[in-house]
Structures are given as structure tokens and as C-alpha cells.
Image (cartoon, rainbow, N blue to C red; front, side, top):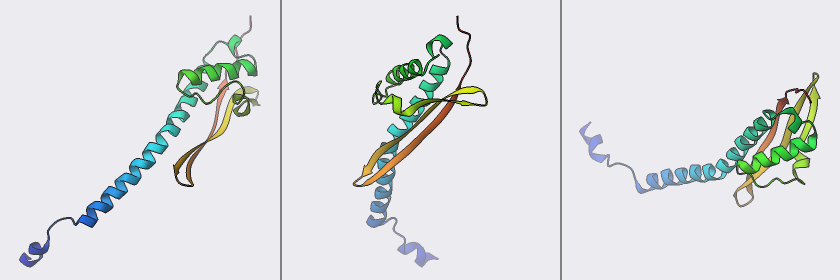
Length: 132
């Protein structure tokens, strides 16, 4: 038992380098994934804000798209404008209820030709309102 303790000196330099390399990979992945997740949560929050608006402000698809684009700008997502938001925002009727559907992909370069991608496919019910 004494002989075993005599030869144990701690971590080697290679062990420390391997740990730093692993931490660096996790850090890089976290830095690249964080903007994707913040955009995802901003989209969900903006969709919820649209559903909470009075019916008069969301009675047509164009009003819904404009409202969603404004809420996204408030939440710090600037890549959508009145032209490209038409491609991702739709309304569907399911079981007699109207739903706001947002579908698109968020790619983010991890390094070289390797990309980290998230597919957003969210749907929220648009409650009925009474028109004046």
C-alpha cells in the first residue's frame, strides 16, 4: 500500500490538456447554441403576445404578421420584416379553432462546415373575439 502511494503524483499535463479541450468544446457549443435558444423563446413570447391582443388587432392574417414582426423586434429578433415573415407565419383551422402557426429553421455555424440547426414548428390557438 505504501508503494502505491509513493508513485501517485497527481494529474499529468496531458490530462489537464484533455480537460481544457473538453471544456473548450462545451463552451463553443454553448456560445453557438445560446442565440438559437434565445430566438426560440423570443418567438414563443411574441406569439403569446399576439394571442393576448384584442381581436380587432388580429382579425386578418396581415395584421397578425405585422403584430408578430413588431413583437419580435421588441424582443430583439431583427431578421424578420414584412416580406420574409409571410413565408413562416400561417393560420390554420383545427377542430373549428384558429391557430397561429410559425415554421422555420435557424442554422448557426458551429465551425467549418458543421452547423447547429433548430427547427421551429410552434402553434398557438387564437381565441375568438367579438367584433364591434
